[in-house]
Length: 115
Length: 112
Image 1 (cartoon, chains in turn yellow, red):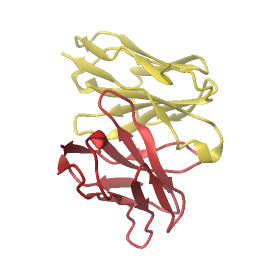
Image 2: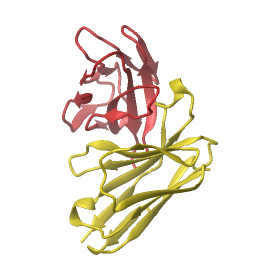
Image 3: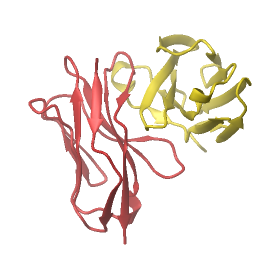
């Protein structure tokens, strides 16, 4: 069983469309994250949720909206897609206690290509 | 702000060669340091960590020592295997936030 799974693996879409990426973890973790890896391979945090509550919201356009229906899921919705949104998006999760927050478990990534 | 710099790849080695991937960081205070590895087609996974100066993290034959005087956390392995081919990410983190800051990643290819 995959610990952190995200779908789809690949997403090709036109500029201006709205799309979603789903993420689920079966580790019983309380905290989930979304990261973006750009074309230069930098991996940067976008959001962090703890028990369905937003904890970290880095400088991300408000076209990006995370949705957490329960603590095992953190989906990423992107409205009005732009060329610059093309990247690989990683979901991750961790336990909530202080020392464990940096021990994160990642999904395999979703490669988004905006044409 | 905090940042991590690691050596550019790709790195190509023959099996049983010695590996070093350099990582330096800029941070205030005393962050924890990590190496994550991403095997082809998989998500990142924690390889090793060190939480304070002079700590040595080790796992699967890999080692890295937290050097505060040189702000470094270089990854080493004495004898690499083909199965070590992956992308390696150095990262720093602060336990209360869970906000990991990653380097760019270094792709390692090991040839038989």
